[in-house]
Length: 202
Image (cartoon, rainbow, N blue to C red; front, side, top):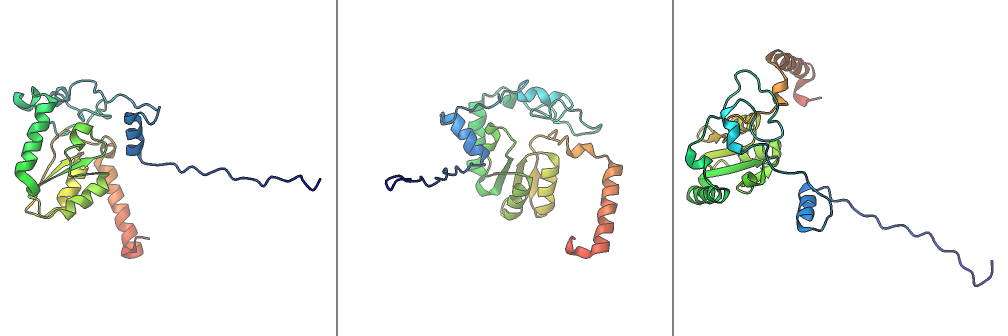
């Protein structure tokens, strides 16, 4: 090695942090900052077409078979079914202005954009249950999600509050996988565990 020669020090490559936010990723696609693509948000049929037949309603579970006796939505008045998205949006905005803090709208993040854009809170089932519990001033909680989520909000709300599920057919195919015997067996196992280990949850 000559006096003028040198050895290059290893250079660490810069670490690129990944942004785990689905929303940020989708916004990058929408604005053109990302060349990735999303799947189509189009429904197999119009949202009102699902109200007249048994099923979970529009969305990813629309092809799943619902349990016998599952609630059905029923047909909405023609004034709503025939309204444009713009008209429905204007009606919702007007109702929210009129009702103010008397109503809180919770939107599960799996809901479509035309629903969550009107939500006061958007999140997963736990986050929305927490939001419902924190809004003791609201007379009504409109829960844009599935049955068990609205039922949880109802348990956490005050007796003076009404919890409204806009689509009565909004069941959860995963929640419906367990039959009553399985639920009762699980409840008994949990009871034994709590009795054996106390309330520490270990």
